[in-house]
Image (tube, rainbow, N blue to C red; front, side, top):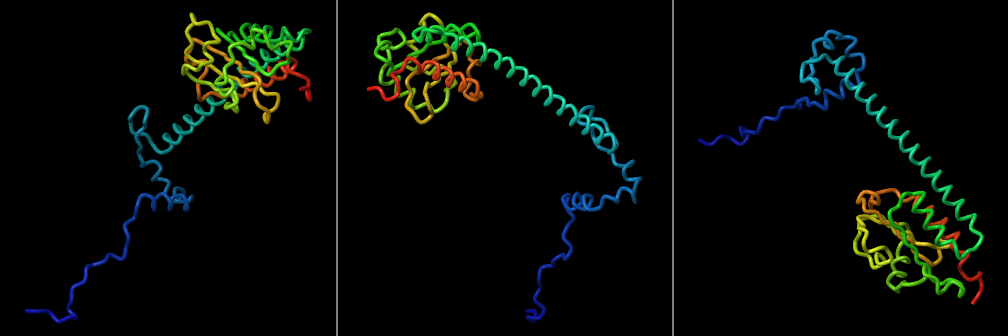
Length: 241
């Protein structure tokens, strides 16, 4: 027997939505006096400690979280102090190397002093330097040889020092072939950021972690800028043909 239309069944809809964990958390955040009115709950609530896997009270768990936060801040502060000391040490080395360059009376000696200073002050296994577009008096010097168009194009393509593994760059031939190279840094030399390169400096190491592609390059950039400023003495005077 068919039921009249007005007896048509409709699904039951519960007008009360279920309470979620988020609702409970929001209620507790909005009701800071809840635990004052129900102090016994603080004693009864038991949590599992992630360190001992034993049941602890809410107060004990809060204390653990606070101790963990303090330890994290202590480690962070220790790292900041260590990095600060490392930076201060590198600053001192950079200043000593810069003094070497400023004390060179003959500009022709600058490349040699620059490279020997890097080897000694920064404990680098290998360094190399090539320059181009210099004054005629320096055009035949050793540091102007074996500079291909590809090497110049590589230098011009670098807007900041490159750090990373040895990818077989053509400029690797500037180094001693008998010594292995696992990581390197390429420093383009410019008088100003808007000008083309007139040189490229290569720092190489057998340690694959010495020059990593995710490392900061601030100090390497400063070395490149100081080297470019010193070596600009070898270039033709501004406005010369």
